[in-house]
Image (cartoon, rainbow over all chains, first blue to last red; front, top):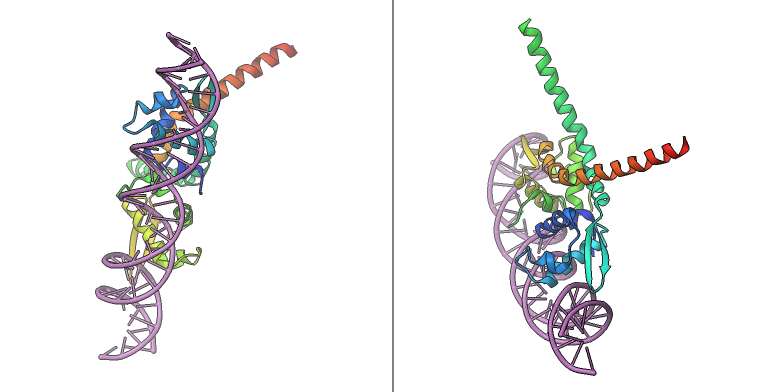
Length: 106
Length: 106
DNA sequence: TATATATGCAACTGGGAGGTTTCGCAAATT
DNA sequence: AATTTGCGAAACCTCCCAGTTGCATATATA
C-alpha cells in the first residue's frame, strides 16, 4: 500500500482533518462531528495520517487526542522548492521588463 | 470526476512529469522514454494535468509540447501557508530556549 | 499518393481507496 | 458488577483510477 504524504493530502477530508487539528488536538469523535461520515471512516483517515507521520496520538484515559506533526508538512514545502526558482525567475523577467519601460520613459 | 491539484500531484508519475517539464517543455513520446509505462498512460497523466491547468500544450507540427504552468503550483504553497505559522512559532520557541541558554552562559 | 510518425480517444481490466456495518476491547460511570 | 462510552479492527461493497490494447486522426516524409 502506497503511503506517502502526497497521497495523504490528496483526500479533501484528510486535508480538513489536518486543518482542524492544526488549531488544537482533537479526538476522533469530536472530529467526526465536523463531517458527514461515520466516526469509523474518520478513524481510517487518521490511521493513514498516522502511518505518514503527519499526525501523532496522545492517550488520555479512554480518549485519544490526535495532534498535527507540523514539521512533516515541510516535505511538501521541500518539493515545491524546485518550482520556486521558476517563480523567482519569472519575477526577474518581469523586473527586466519594468526596467526597460523605465529607461524608455527617461 | 474529482480534478484538483492535490489529487493531481498524488501520483508519483505525475510528479515526475511535472519535474521533467519544469526544466524544459517535452512531448509525450519524449516523456514516456523516462518511464516504464506506455505512451498512452503518459498521455492520460498529461490529460489530467491539463485539466488541472498545471500544464499547457504547445502544438508544433504533429508534435505537442507540454509545458509547466508553474504559477498553478502556488495553490499548494497557499494551502501550506496556514502551517507555516506553526513552524514559525516553533522556531520562536527554539529561539527562546537559545536565549535562555545564552543568558545562563553569561 | 503511399507510408511513417506523433498523438489522442475508447473500451476493458485489476487493484486499491473510501465508505458502512458489525464486533471486541478498554476505560469511565452507575 | 453491570452499563455506558470511546475507540480500533475486520469484513464487505462500490466505484474510481492507473494501466493496457486497439483504433482513428493529423502531419511529415518517401
